[in-house]
Image (cartoon, rainbow, N blue to C red; front, side, top):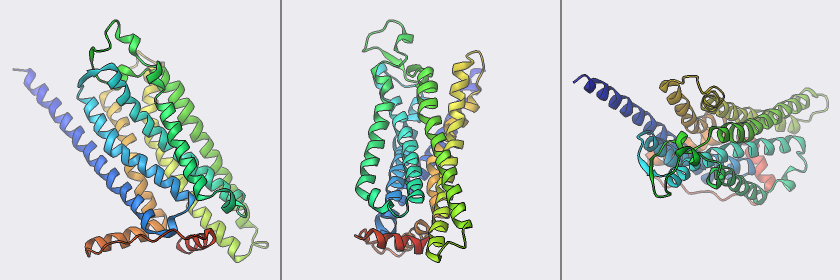
Length: 330
């Protein structure tokens, strides 16, 4: 009889976990779908930077549609074949990797816009931006699927046939040396360090240009002030990504470098929650910090409440006209 309270307590914890994860998934999907719609209906957002932002939004939508449901399923410990469990775990890594590579592409894009403003429009075209987005996703798949070619925990399962079922857990199939050395140090710390250096240089150059008031024209000062505002918003997105994803990676490092250390279930759940919450935060940053998104979302919500169709406006053929439009909105 004494075991029943423990079972009920565990059921309560599971229900709370599933409920919170479901709420995060819904917020992530709805918010990022609105981001994609905002870019589609507002021609002022049809530039290279927002092309990368859409890629990031798609990754965040995938978090709500795929990653969180998979996390809930894995938490319940269902049984499946090793390779199936490994593939599902790799999907989580692919989507995470696409997010950080999209953030890196955004940082490089803003760096080029500040460093070579006169040649930016001819070098960074919309077509090249789309190619860069495709490369980010291809690289994400290649790095995320590395465990499928052998860097996994199959040997730790002992002698079992390929058709044998296991209790599917992320740590059951994924090796911690891969997660720490390859995934964290190689594909999280390095890109984040590059982004920090790029944004530091962007802010340094912009501040220097704005301080040259004697040489600056009105248009030039407006250009750099606009770039400073957008750079701050995008740097905030990078900061939130780091703050939300570092806890789970730190837990992985503790588990790998200090096997005797005990990690509480609460700390593990906190790290998982934080990594998922990040996908729901980005649309809020865009809405509150970037005026074109805010204006578009307000108009879109008004049209929805009045039951009027929203007609997308085509992207302007002239890059110069686009730049002028964004300048006005920002």
